[in-house]
Image (cartoon, rainbow, N blue to C red; front, side):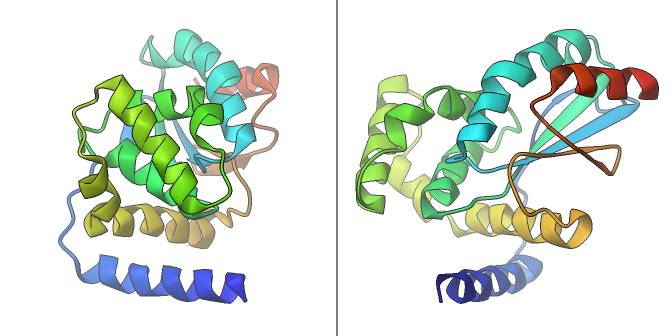
Length: 193
């Protein structure tokens, strides 16, 4: 039943997105003209996604993104309401920078806890207030344009790449298996450069 409700909600938000004039910027890093383009579909409550940000992403950034060889885009694929709310926070500044996204993954264990969505939201709000990000938590959570943008990321991921789990990495429009194996990821990128 929950899956049906989620599917109906996603379809509803998709149609709202199509007719809305949104100008939400994607969260990305690197040279926009890079030969290698990586898309990461992720959910902010996913422990494996947090591991990717802590263990794989720093190496990827050092070896390829900072040198301009690779561009990376982080796309939202929320697996639950808490992840959707956190994604809204990550996009709320709408500056296209992924700093807040990385911060949320680094501190995931501090806010992804509690018995209810209210507990998790409270933890998330406290974390954001402590960071002194200047965000109005309630306005970010209530922003329907950002919500529509995030849900459209999820819908397009399913339609275009058949995304079923997070994190899922797409390299130059092809799925990459085993996103936690940096050695294999590095070899794949080197072949494309």
